[in-house]
Image 1 (cartoon, each protein chain N blue to C red):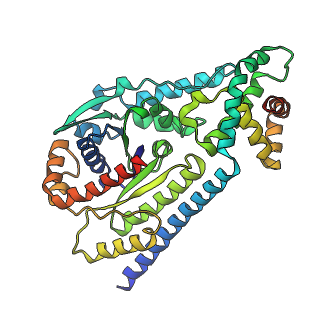
Image 2 (image 1 turned 45 degrees about the vertical axis):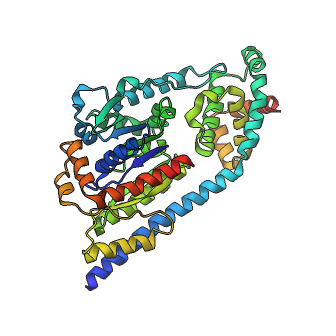
Image 3 (image 1 turned 90 degrees about the vertical axis):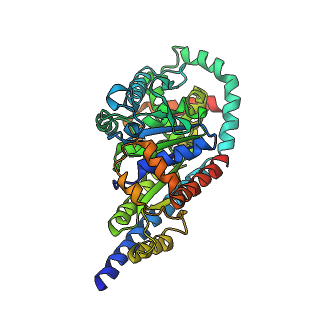
Amino acid sequence: MKKEKTVDKVLEKMLEEGIIENIKADEEVKDKKGEINLEEIVKISSEFEKKKKAFGELSKRSTLSFGTPLAIKVAYEIAYDFTKRKLKLNCDKSSLIVPYILTLFVKAWEESSDSFRKYYSEMYPEVVKLYEFAKKVVK
Amino acid sequence: MILSIANQKGGTGKTTTTLVLAYLLAKKSKKVLAVDFDPQASLTMALKINPSEISGVDKILLNCMAKYKEQQSDLNFEDTISFNIPVDDAIETVSFMDVEFDLIPANPELEDIETQLKSMVDGDSILLWSLSSCKERYDIILIDNRPALDWLVVNALTASDYILAPVELSTIALGGFAELLKTVARVKRKFNENLKWLGILPVKFEKRNRDMNKKLEILREKVGKHIEIFPPVPKSVSLERMLHIDSADELMKNVKSAKNVLQAYENVTNKILEVAVE
Protein backbone atom coordinates (compact mmCIF):
# COMPACT_ATOMS: atom_id res chain seq x y z
CA MET A 1 0.00 0.00 0.00
CA LYS A 2 2.81 2.31 0.99
CA LYS A 3 4.66 1.52 -2.24
CA GLU A 4 1.50 2.24 -4.28
CA LYS A 5 1.15 5.63 -2.66
CA THR A 6 4.77 6.46 -3.49
CA VAL A 7 4.29 5.51 -7.13
CA ASP A 8 1.21 7.73 -7.27
CA LYS A 9 3.19 10.59 -5.78
CA VAL A 10 5.86 10.19 -8.46
CA LEU A 11 3.16 10.16 -11.11
CA GLU A 12 1.50 13.25 -9.66
CA LYS A 13 4.83 15.04 -9.71
CA MET A 14 5.50 14.04 -13.33
CA LEU A 15 2.07 15.20 -14.46
CA GLU A 16 2.48 18.44 -12.55
CA GLU A 17 5.80 19.10 -14.25
CA GLY A 18 4.31 18.34 -17.64
CA ILE A 19 1.38 20.66 -17.14
CA ILE A 20 3.60 23.45 -15.75
CA GLU A 21 5.72 23.19 -18.92
CA ASN A 22 2.55 23.60 -21.00
CA ILE A 23 1.38 26.59 -19.01
CA LYS A 24 4.82 28.22 -19.27
CA ALA A 25 4.91 27.58 -23.03
CA ASP A 26 1.46 29.18 -23.42
CA GLU A 27 2.58 32.22 -21.45
CA GLU A 28 5.78 32.60 -23.46
CA VAL A 29 3.83 32.35 -26.71
CA LYS A 30 1.36 34.93 -25.46
CA ASP A 31 4.21 37.29 -24.57
CA LYS A 32 5.82 36.80 -27.97
CA LYS A 33 2.58 37.57 -29.76
CA GLY A 34 2.28 40.72 -27.73
CA GLU A 35 5.62 41.95 -29.03
CA ILE A 36 4.33 42.56 -32.51
CA ASN A 37 1.07 44.04 -33.55
CA LEU A 38 -0.08 41.74 -36.31
CA GLU A 39 -2.71 44.15 -37.59
CA GLU A 40 -0.08 46.82 -37.90
CA ILE A 41 2.15 44.58 -39.97
CA VAL A 42 -0.72 43.52 -42.20
CA LYS A 43 -1.57 47.19 -42.74
CA ILE A 44 2.01 48.03 -43.61
CA SER A 45 2.25 45.05 -45.92
CA SER A 46 -0.89 46.01 -47.82
CA GLU A 47 0.61 49.42 -48.45
CA PHE A 48 3.68 47.69 -49.71
CA GLU A 49 1.66 45.59 -52.11
CA LYS A 50 1.25 48.79 -54.10
CA LYS A 51 4.97 49.32 -54.14
CA LYS A 52 5.75 45.77 -55.13
CA LYS A 53 6.21 46.43 -58.81
CA ALA A 54 8.40 49.45 -58.32
CA PHE A 55 10.37 47.61 -55.73
CA GLY A 56 10.95 44.73 -58.12
CA GLU A 57 12.43 47.15 -60.65
CA LEU A 58 14.60 48.73 -58.00
CA SER A 59 16.08 45.41 -56.98
CA LYS A 60 17.27 44.74 -60.51
CA ARG A 61 19.58 47.75 -60.57
CA SER A 62 23.18 46.78 -60.44
CA THR A 63 24.01 49.79 -58.29
CA LEU A 64 22.48 47.99 -55.38
CA SER A 65 25.65 46.13 -54.68
CA PHE A 66 24.46 45.06 -51.29
CA GLY A 67 21.49 43.25 -52.82
CA THR A 68 23.49 40.12 -53.17
CA PRO A 69 21.77 36.79 -53.20
CA LEU A 70 23.33 36.00 -49.88
CA ALA A 71 21.94 39.12 -48.29
CA ILE A 72 18.55 38.36 -49.74
CA LYS A 73 18.74 34.95 -48.26
CA VAL A 74 19.61 36.42 -44.93
CA ALA A 75 16.59 38.67 -45.12
CA TYR A 76 14.53 35.74 -46.12
CA GLU A 77 15.88 33.53 -43.37
CA ILE A 78 15.33 36.07 -40.68
CA ALA A 79 11.96 37.23 -41.90
CA TYR A 80 10.91 33.72 -42.59
CA ASP A 81 11.98 32.51 -39.20
CA PHE A 82 10.29 35.47 -37.61
CA THR A 83 7.12 34.88 -39.54
CA LYS A 84 7.06 31.24 -38.83
CA ARG A 85 7.91 31.27 -35.20
CA LYS A 86 6.09 34.39 -34.17
CA LEU A 87 3.20 35.02 -36.48
CA LYS A 88 2.60 31.59 -37.89
CA LEU A 89 1.64 32.57 -41.38
CA ASN A 90 3.56 29.73 -42.86
CA CYS A 91 0.53 28.00 -44.34
CA ASP A 92 0.23 30.72 -46.87
CA LYS A 93 3.68 31.42 -48.14
CA SER A 94 2.44 32.73 -51.45
CA SER A 95 1.24 35.85 -49.65
CA LEU A 96 4.75 36.63 -48.47
CA ILE A 97 5.80 39.14 -51.05
CA VAL A 98 9.29 40.49 -50.80
CA PRO A 99 8.41 43.92 -49.35
CA TYR A 100 6.39 42.17 -46.74
CA ILE A 101 9.36 40.02 -45.91
CA LEU A 102 11.53 43.09 -45.63
CA THR A 103 8.97 44.78 -43.43
CA LEU A 104 9.09 41.82 -41.15
CA PHE A 105 12.84 41.72 -41.41
CA VAL A 106 13.21 45.33 -40.30
CA LYS A 107 10.89 44.77 -37.40
CA ALA A 108 12.56 41.52 -36.48
CA TRP A 109 15.99 43.10 -36.64
CA GLU A 110 15.04 46.15 -34.62
CA GLU A 111 13.39 44.09 -31.96
CA SER A 112 16.11 41.50 -31.71
CA SER A 113 18.47 41.49 -28.79
CA ASP A 114 21.94 43.00 -29.14
CA SER A 115 23.52 39.59 -28.77
CA PHE A 116 21.38 38.17 -31.56
CA ARG A 117 22.28 41.06 -33.88
CA LYS A 118 25.96 40.65 -33.06
CA TYR A 119 25.81 36.93 -33.75
CA TYR A 120 24.01 37.40 -37.06
CA SER A 121 26.23 40.28 -38.18
CA GLU A 122 29.28 38.17 -37.60
CA MET A 123 27.81 35.28 -39.50
CA TYR A 124 26.44 37.39 -42.36
CA PRO A 125 28.21 40.79 -42.62
CA GLU A 126 25.75 41.85 -45.36
CA VAL A 127 22.90 41.85 -42.92
CA VAL A 128 23.62 45.35 -41.61
CA LYS A 129 23.73 46.82 -45.13
CA LEU A 130 20.58 45.00 -45.98
CA TYR A 131 18.91 46.35 -42.88
CA GLU A 132 19.80 49.91 -43.86
CA PHE A 133 18.44 49.26 -47.33
CA ALA A 134 15.29 47.54 -46.12
CA LYS A 135 14.68 50.30 -43.62
CA LYS A 136 14.64 52.89 -46.40
CA VAL A 137 12.19 50.79 -48.39
CA VAL A 138 9.95 50.17 -45.42
CA LYS A 139 9.97 53.84 -44.57
CA MET B 1 -8.95 22.21 -38.47
CA ILE B 2 -6.18 19.64 -38.15
CA LEU B 3 -6.24 17.30 -35.17
CA SER B 4 -3.38 15.04 -34.16
CA ILE B 5 -4.20 11.89 -32.27
CA ALA B 6 -0.98 11.21 -30.41
CA ASN B 7 0.65 9.37 -27.56
CA GLN B 8 4.07 7.83 -27.58
CA LYS B 9 2.81 4.69 -25.92
CA GLY B 10 1.60 1.94 -28.21
CA GLY B 11 -1.73 0.20 -27.84
CA THR B 12 -3.61 3.20 -26.46
CA GLY B 13 -6.10 3.15 -29.30
CA LYS B 14 -4.81 5.97 -31.50
CA THR B 15 -5.78 4.22 -34.70
CA THR B 16 -9.11 3.10 -33.23
CA THR B 17 -9.80 6.66 -32.11
CA THR B 18 -8.86 8.08 -35.53
CA LEU B 19 -11.06 5.59 -37.30
CA VAL B 20 -14.07 6.03 -35.05
CA LEU B 21 -13.81 9.83 -35.13
CA ALA B 22 -13.45 9.82 -38.93
CA TYR B 23 -16.57 7.67 -39.13
CA LEU B 24 -18.63 9.75 -36.71
CA LEU B 25 -17.59 13.04 -38.30
CA ALA B 26 -18.32 11.75 -41.81
CA LYS B 27 -21.66 10.49 -40.51
CA LYS B 28 -22.39 14.09 -39.53
CA SER B 29 -21.75 15.08 -43.15
CA LYS B 30 -18.33 16.55 -42.47
CA LYS B 31 -15.65 16.35 -45.13
CA VAL B 32 -12.95 14.33 -43.44
CA LEU B 33 -9.37 13.52 -44.40
CA ALA B 34 -7.55 10.93 -42.31
CA VAL B 35 -3.76 10.90 -42.56
CA ASP B 36 -2.01 7.69 -41.61
CA PHE B 37 1.27 9.02 -40.25
CA ASP B 38 2.57 5.77 -38.84
CA PRO B 39 5.00 3.62 -40.86
CA GLN B 40 3.23 0.59 -39.43
CA ALA B 41 0.28 1.66 -41.58
CA SER B 42 -2.35 0.16 -39.27
CA LEU B 43 -5.02 2.63 -40.35
CA THR B 44 -4.23 2.02 -44.01
CA MET B 45 -4.45 -1.73 -43.66
CA ALA B 46 -7.59 -1.58 -41.53
CA LEU B 47 -9.22 0.25 -44.41
CA LYS B 48 -8.23 -2.60 -46.71
CA ILE B 49 -5.50 -0.79 -48.60
CA ASN B 50 -2.26 -2.57 -49.29
CA PRO B 51 0.54 -0.18 -48.21
CA SER B 52 2.96 -1.58 -50.77
CA GLU B 53 0.62 -0.79 -53.64
CA ILE B 54 0.01 2.88 -52.99
CA SER B 55 1.72 6.24 -53.26
CA GLY B 56 1.53 7.18 -49.60
CA VAL B 57 2.22 10.15 -47.38
CA ASP B 58 5.97 9.47 -47.74
CA LYS B 59 5.85 10.45 -51.42
CA ILE B 60 4.09 13.71 -50.59
CA LEU B 61 6.74 14.53 -47.99
CA LEU B 62 9.59 13.71 -50.37
CA ASN B 63 8.03 15.91 -53.03
CA CYS B 64 7.69 18.77 -50.57
CA MET B 65 11.26 18.38 -49.32
CA ALA B 66 12.56 18.49 -52.90
CA LYS B 67 10.54 21.64 -53.69
CA TYR B 68 11.72 23.29 -50.53
CA LYS B 69 15.37 22.67 -51.35
CA GLU B 70 14.85 23.84 -54.93
CA GLN B 71 13.21 27.10 -53.85
CA GLN B 72 15.82 27.80 -51.22
CA SER B 73 18.62 27.73 -53.76
CA ASP B 74 16.77 29.80 -56.36
CA LEU B 75 15.36 32.45 -54.08
CA ASN B 76 15.54 36.00 -55.37
CA PHE B 77 13.75 39.31 -55.03
CA GLU B 78 11.20 38.50 -57.68
CA ASP B 79 10.05 35.27 -56.23
CA THR B 80 7.09 34.64 -54.13
CA ILE B 81 7.47 31.59 -52.02
CA SER B 82 4.93 28.90 -52.52
CA PHE B 83 4.80 25.19 -52.13
CA ASN B 84 2.15 23.77 -54.33
CA ILE B 85 2.43 20.14 -53.46
CA PRO B 86 0.16 17.87 -55.49
CA VAL B 87 -1.47 15.55 -52.99
CA ASP B 88 -4.44 14.29 -54.96
CA ASP B 89 -2.57 11.29 -56.33
CA ALA B 90 -2.01 10.09 -52.81
CA ILE B 91 -5.57 10.58 -51.57
CA GLU B 92 -7.79 7.51 -51.54
CA THR B 93 -11.52 7.89 -51.00
CA VAL B 94 -12.61 5.04 -48.78
CA SER B 95 -16.10 3.71 -48.36
CA PHE B 96 -16.39 2.74 -44.74
CA MET B 97 -19.66 1.14 -43.67
CA ASP B 98 -22.29 3.72 -44.57
CA VAL B 99 -19.94 6.71 -44.99
CA GLU B 100 -17.09 7.87 -47.16
CA PHE B 101 -14.00 9.82 -46.23
CA ASP B 102 -10.58 10.50 -47.70
CA LEU B 103 -7.38 8.86 -46.57
CA ILE B 104 -3.72 9.60 -47.18
CA PRO B 105 -2.29 6.15 -46.56
CA ALA B 106 1.08 5.25 -45.12
CA ASN B 107 3.64 2.63 -45.93
CA PRO B 108 6.86 1.47 -44.24
CA GLU B 109 8.97 3.86 -46.37
CA LEU B 110 7.76 6.63 -44.08
CA GLU B 111 10.31 5.36 -41.59
CA ASP B 112 13.19 6.49 -43.85
CA ILE B 113 11.78 10.01 -44.08
CA GLU B 114 12.15 10.54 -40.36
CA THR B 115 15.95 10.48 -40.62
CA GLN B 116 15.87 13.00 -43.46
CA LEU B 117 13.53 15.34 -41.59
CA LYS B 118 15.78 15.32 -38.58
CA SER B 119 18.77 16.51 -40.59
CA MET B 120 17.15 19.25 -42.69
CA VAL B 121 16.52 22.92 -41.94
CA ASP B 122 12.79 23.39 -41.30
CA GLY B 123 12.36 19.65 -41.11
CA ASP B 124 9.57 20.29 -38.65
CA SER B 125 7.26 21.91 -41.19
CA ILE B 126 7.21 19.48 -44.09
CA LEU B 127 3.85 17.90 -43.30
CA LEU B 128 2.37 21.34 -42.65
CA TRP B 129 3.38 22.54 -46.10
CA SER B 130 2.38 19.26 -47.67
CA LEU B 131 -1.15 19.58 -46.36
CA SER B 132 -1.53 23.29 -47.04
CA SER B 133 -2.71 22.77 -50.61
CA CYS B 134 -5.61 20.52 -49.57
CA LYS B 135 -6.41 21.84 -46.10
CA GLU B 136 -9.20 24.12 -47.25
CA ARG B 137 -11.07 21.26 -48.90
CA TYR B 138 -11.76 19.51 -45.61
CA ASP B 139 -13.71 20.34 -42.49
CA ILE B 140 -11.46 18.15 -40.38
CA ILE B 141 -8.09 16.51 -40.97
CA LEU B 142 -7.22 13.75 -38.50
CA ILE B 143 -3.60 12.61 -38.17
CA ASP B 144 -3.02 9.15 -36.75
CA ASN B 145 0.45 9.30 -35.18
CA ARG B 146 2.95 6.58 -34.50
CA PRO B 147 3.69 5.61 -30.89
CA ALA B 148 6.87 7.70 -30.57
CA LEU B 149 8.11 11.22 -29.90
CA ASP B 150 10.24 11.66 -33.01
CA TRP B 151 10.38 14.01 -36.01
CA LEU B 152 7.33 12.48 -37.65
CA VAL B 153 5.33 13.30 -34.54
CA VAL B 154 6.91 16.78 -34.35
CA ASN B 155 5.81 17.31 -37.97
CA ALA B 156 2.29 16.21 -37.15
CA LEU B 157 2.12 18.52 -34.14
CA THR B 158 3.56 21.43 -36.13
CA ALA B 159 0.87 20.91 -38.75
CA SER B 160 -1.94 20.57 -36.20
CA ASP B 161 -4.29 23.02 -34.60
CA TYR B 162 -5.25 20.60 -31.84
CA ILE B 163 -3.98 17.48 -30.14
CA LEU B 164 -5.99 14.66 -28.61
CA ALA B 165 -4.22 12.06 -26.49
CA PRO B 166 -5.86 8.72 -25.84
CA VAL B 167 -4.37 7.47 -22.55
CA GLU B 168 -4.59 4.32 -20.52
CA LEU B 169 -5.06 4.73 -16.80
CA SER B 170 -1.95 2.96 -15.57
CA THR B 171 1.18 4.33 -13.92
CA ILE B 172 3.42 3.52 -16.88
CA ALA B 173 0.98 4.93 -19.45
CA LEU B 174 0.41 8.14 -17.49
CA GLY B 175 4.16 8.51 -16.92
CA GLY B 176 4.57 8.36 -20.67
CA PHE B 177 1.78 10.88 -21.06
CA ALA B 178 3.67 13.27 -18.76
CA GLU B 179 6.52 13.12 -21.30
CA LEU B 180 4.06 13.89 -24.09
CA LEU B 181 2.97 16.98 -22.15
CA LYS B 182 6.57 18.18 -22.18
CA THR B 183 6.95 17.42 -25.89
CA VAL B 184 3.84 19.44 -26.67
CA ALA B 185 5.26 22.34 -24.66
CA ARG B 186 8.49 22.12 -26.67
CA VAL B 187 6.57 22.08 -29.95
CA LYS B 188 4.55 25.12 -28.84
CA ARG B 189 7.75 27.00 -28.02
CA LYS B 190 9.76 26.07 -31.06
CA PHE B 191 7.49 25.10 -33.93
CA ASN B 192 3.80 25.77 -33.48
CA GLU B 193 2.59 28.29 -30.98
CA ASN B 194 -1.00 27.83 -32.11
CA LEU B 195 -1.13 24.20 -31.04
CA LYS B 196 -3.88 23.64 -28.49
CA TRP B 197 -5.07 20.69 -26.50
CA LEU B 198 -8.42 19.31 -27.58
CA GLY B 199 -8.28 16.99 -24.61
CA ILE B 200 -7.30 13.71 -23.09
CA LEU B 201 -9.36 10.62 -23.75
CA PRO B 202 -8.93 7.94 -21.09
CA VAL B 203 -9.40 4.54 -22.73
CA LYS B 204 -9.97 0.95 -21.64
CA PHE B 205 -11.55 2.18 -18.42
CA GLU B 206 -12.82 -0.41 -15.96
CA LYS B 207 -15.38 1.22 -13.74
CA ARG B 208 -14.84 -1.20 -10.86
CA ASN B 209 -11.06 -1.12 -10.97
CA ARG B 210 -9.97 0.86 -7.92
CA ASP B 211 -6.52 1.66 -9.28
CA MET B 212 -7.89 3.00 -12.56
CA ASN B 213 -10.33 5.20 -10.64
CA LYS B 214 -7.46 6.49 -8.55
CA LYS B 215 -5.42 7.25 -11.68
CA LEU B 216 -8.39 9.03 -13.24
CA GLU B 217 -8.71 11.09 -10.08
CA ILE B 218 -5.01 12.02 -10.21
CA LEU B 219 -5.31 12.94 -13.88
CA ARG B 220 -8.33 15.12 -13.22
CA GLU B 221 -6.72 16.79 -10.23
CA LYS B 222 -3.33 17.48 -11.79
CA VAL B 223 -4.21 18.09 -15.42
CA GLY B 224 -7.97 18.59 -15.59
CA LYS B 225 -7.87 22.29 -14.71
CA HIS B 226 -5.85 23.02 -17.84
CA ILE B 227 -6.76 20.31 -20.32
CA GLU B 228 -10.21 18.82 -20.84
CA ILE B 229 -10.46 15.22 -19.78
CA PHE B 230 -13.21 13.48 -21.69
CA PRO B 231 -15.42 10.86 -20.07
CA PRO B 232 -13.47 7.60 -20.39
CA VAL B 233 -14.01 5.01 -23.09
CA PRO B 234 -15.03 1.87 -21.19
CA LYS B 235 -13.03 -1.27 -21.68
CA SER B 236 -14.79 -3.48 -24.13
CA VAL B 237 -13.98 -7.14 -24.58
CA SER B 238 -14.91 -7.02 -28.21
CA LEU B 239 -12.70 -3.95 -28.74
CA GLU B 240 -9.81 -5.61 -26.93
CA ARG B 241 -9.99 -8.40 -29.41
CA MET B 242 -9.58 -5.83 -32.09
CA LEU B 243 -6.41 -4.43 -30.55
CA HIS B 244 -4.56 -5.23 -33.71
CA ILE B 245 -7.22 -4.10 -36.07
CA ASP B 246 -7.89 -6.56 -38.84
CA SER B 247 -10.95 -4.92 -40.24
CA ALA B 248 -12.21 -1.41 -39.71
CA ASP B 249 -15.78 -2.55 -40.44
CA GLU B 250 -15.64 -5.13 -37.66
CA LEU B 251 -14.19 -2.59 -35.28
CA MET B 252 -16.88 -0.03 -36.02
CA LYS B 253 -19.62 -2.64 -35.63
CA ASN B 254 -18.23 -3.41 -32.18
CA VAL B 255 -18.10 0.24 -31.24
CA LYS B 256 -21.65 0.80 -32.41
CA SER B 257 -22.95 -2.19 -30.50
CA ALA B 258 -21.36 -0.97 -27.24
CA LYS B 259 -23.46 2.09 -26.56
CA ASN B 260 -21.27 3.44 -23.76
CA VAL B 261 -18.18 3.16 -25.96
CA LEU B 262 -19.94 4.93 -28.79
CA GLN B 263 -21.12 7.66 -26.41
CA ALA B 264 -17.53 8.30 -25.26
CA TYR B 265 -16.42 8.87 -28.84
CA GLU B 266 -19.54 10.96 -29.56
CA ASN B 267 -18.43 13.31 -26.77
CA VAL B 268 -15.10 13.87 -28.51
CA THR B 269 -16.82 14.29 -31.88
CA ASN B 270 -19.08 16.98 -30.45
CA LYS B 271 -16.09 18.80 -28.99
CA ILE B 272 -14.32 18.68 -32.38
CA LEU B 273 -17.39 20.15 -34.05
CA GLU B 274 -17.60 22.83 -31.38
CA VAL B 275 -14.00 23.99 -31.84
CA ALA B 276 -14.12 23.60 -35.62
CA VAL B 277 -17.00 26.08 -35.75
CA GLU B 278 -15.07 28.56 -33.59
